Image (cartoon, rainbow, N blue to C red):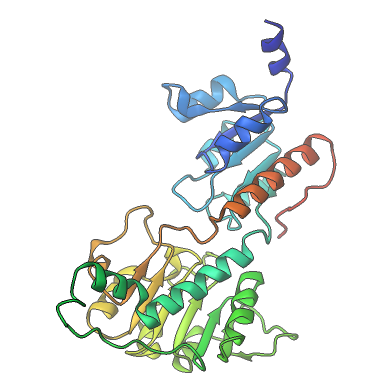
Length: 327
């Protein structure tokens, strides 16, 4: 009984998703926070919130999936003062409504930048050099049957366009410099310190490069930014790598371009309707698919858990957040 009373005095954290790091958080920090887990109750979410979360000030939500923090959910949380998301992106949050209510937001900051950049380069190499396709070729016994495996394309010296030269885009560029690639970029504004060619629109960037790597955030402006015109400008040998958000690319148009040979290949870690991936992509040897795993290394999961806890403890101690989202 005493333990139950003590638990009631702990700061309440509403969990939505839940994030992949939650089992670790629960095992390590249940003595510091009281975690509210709606999925354990046979109730609609809004009913759970109105019944059990009226005094809850902090919320931890999964990022990069189908879990959305809508105004309807926010309306059920009159005491909400902090949202912590396990992602860098905040497109799953009703950002204007949270700002209107004065709710603070914390994200993963720059924690995933290096891992995501590693994945972007890995996907690019895989598509160009046909690594996954070669793996299938060997496993299916085609090599032993003396069939010819088609040659790939070299990465060294390629003209690479980066869409979004933020922290992740800059890390991608740094890695590709090691391959002697010529880097160009498109971003909301020209970066005065960046030593790369700047193109004010994505169409011009695609027309002057051999591969596009999507590193920007999903916003109203970047929704379907990579459309038919951009892909045609990239050309029949061009490659698209997406480690941003699926909705930045017009997925149906990309599939059409891939199947008709209007672009050369794609390396995709994100999709329009995750976890549902269009089956048309499954049998394309010039496409490499990844289950939104660019950020998921063991090391980053450990660091993310620490970051989440540090943000929560800072909030409940009336201290500045460690990784606040700023406008």
